[in-house]
Image 1 (cartoon, rainbow, N blue to C red):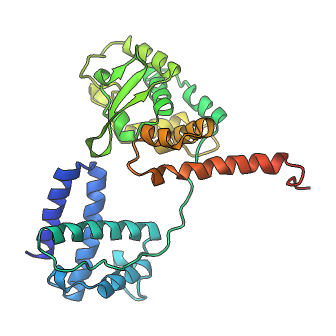
Image 2: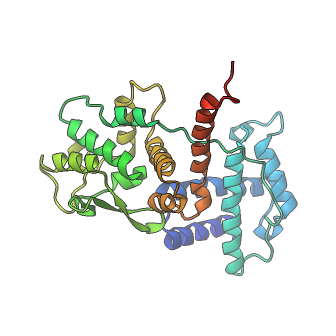
Image 3: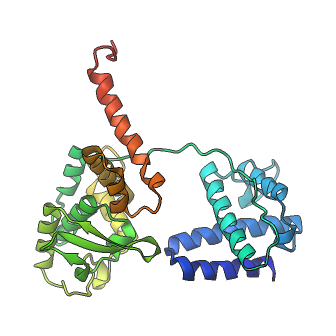
Length: 302
């Protein structure tokens, strides 16, 4: 089987077994295309011909392209992009080994460049309140208010918000059921302001069990790009550039700051690994450090 055929077989297996989002699957395909392009340039006809040293050569070229090269491969990849590429390669190699199509692991002992992890930007409580209470008027105002309140209230992913149906909501119980990554279902609380905004939206009609909660043009479920554009308009008065995922970061940061319960925040966000959630402990410490610097007699700056 050719390397390309092996990659296609892997992607089909990955899609069926893990049920990733379309975005994740597309990212895997883009990353593995880079691997195939490198193998083609090196004349490697099989994954068995790919050694750890060869893989390190690929990483070095992607991180620091040689001078004089032309085309898309002249742009250096950021360390986090290379780490993602390596992760896709390792997943591919594990699959091929299980299937008996690869005798060795070409990624064994291979490390990518060190990633300097950036802390996500969040809104403070006043900024979040200002955003969710922004009313631009017009026929879209009830939908926008319900959308922003639910986003901030429950920490949904953008895809979860767009795919929400009225049957997923239990407004009397203050809950929402969402289907997250890997088709994993979780039940989230819905705050009273979000419940009130959703009730107001439902009262306008079109709130059948299988109907989309947030509709775009023609009554179809609102698209991710439409949410991004609407949020940009609603947040135009903010000092920070607000995007949908910032509201999820804000939800997580405010929950952790108030409760200190990392495990519960992990459950609410639907993170498979608590290490993903731990980034918010750094945000919380940043806030505490600012309070300390401003208040402690031996920390105040003259």
